[in-house]
Amino acid sequence: MTSVPQADAAQRFNSGPPLQPVSSRPDVSILVPAKDEAENLPLFMEQAHAAFASVPQRYEVIVIDDGSVDDSWNVLQELASKYPFLRPVRHGIRRGIADALRTGYLHSRGSILVFYPADLQYKPEDIPRLVAPIVSGESDIVTGYKEGKYEKAFVSGIYNKLSRSLFKMTVRDLNSVKAYRREVMDALPNRPDWHRYMVVMAAADGFSVSEVPVPLYPRNAGQSKFGIGRIPVGVLDMLAVWFELRFARKPLLLFGVLGALLFVVGVIVGIVAILWRVIGGVGFRPLVNLVETCVTVGSVLFATGLLGEMIAAQRAELSQLRARIEDLARERDTTNNL
Image: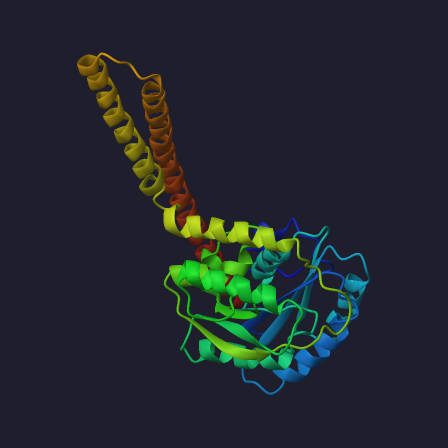
């Protein structure tokens, strides 16, 4: 694989034979996770070639073979010899869309990234329209609003309503194809399945968000990799992202406040229990148990908040260090290309 920004961090991936050097840096990198999509990939690349021929921006397509057990990798090798803008990358085992997008990001060179599936439910002809608001400077991240009938419309509708309510988002479809500036991916935590909340986290970091309608078509070939069992996982991920955005940077705000409140309740109940005993001459064992519980749990929660603050500080330092390393990698790559 040709050396690219962050290539050192990507050496653990089996990327196949080295690619030939490309004379000019692409403007847009299409990241295409693919699991057992051998039947769809030739048509996808044919449509992508036709779509990119009439636009001024330079495109590259990075297809991440995510542990396919069919002939996807051999098909990609053949297609790479036909389409110079294709850069195939391979995972030895299935690692999920989030990891696939991270791998594609590490091998990409464009300043604009696009997440697009390989199943042809979205046509490559719509990619330039998805990218246009970013190219014109109107938006930092653009999500596609699905138009057309599809099997999971009911589940998707519930998911989007919950997400919009919880995160106060105005876009209608959070879990669709997306185009975004490279800086959005730089700031995104590398967590399994959190790619669904890329728009939410980008908005929380101050990036501007917009949406464009994108037609949705029946799957061209193969079967969907996602079933109803993903719903509980999606709900738990939604709560995890909400906690991350609300309290990850200031965990003491949650644990410290709860701990202090419980401690204060314990102290007040203890005073009441003492007065009851001294003035009334009657002891009440449940009050003592309540005091013990409130003081103990309150102290533990407060201590957890303090530990969380130290962890948050370390995360902030690591984030700054990673950003600096990536900046240096880009500077080195720019120097090498001059």
